[in-house]
Length: 140
View 1 (tube, one colour):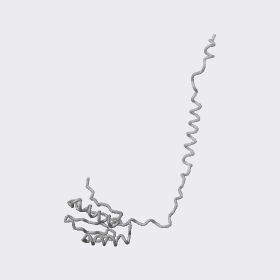
View 2 (cartoon, rainbow, N blue to C red):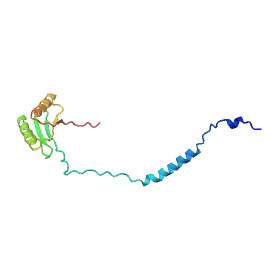
View 3 (cartoon, one colour):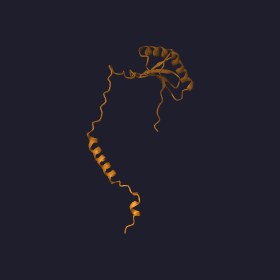
View 4 (cartoon, rainbow, N blue to C red):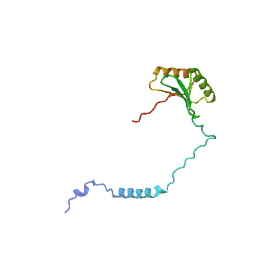
């Protein structure tokens, strides 16, 4: 005779086979439909005119003997030696043509820092907004 107690005991095992079947069916569906989907296309807005190319900077050169030179990189011309007064006049003329034209200062490494600051002060008093320092990169 079979004891009745085993028939009344709750079942503690979970049957996971149906869950695995459903998961495999979903996996097959996604694998088939994924290549069929078209990627979305973006319709970008257009502008009426193109942006102006950046203007080449004017280069103020401070040499070892603290003399000044000006090099207009947009014209690829030779540097011309100038005094402070001539530098101010030339920069005013160039800024009148193009207000956004940047000015870079390149100084010899043996020039005192005070000279560079004085040239920056002159440029600031002339209302030149875009002033930068030019440096040479090391080969490291």
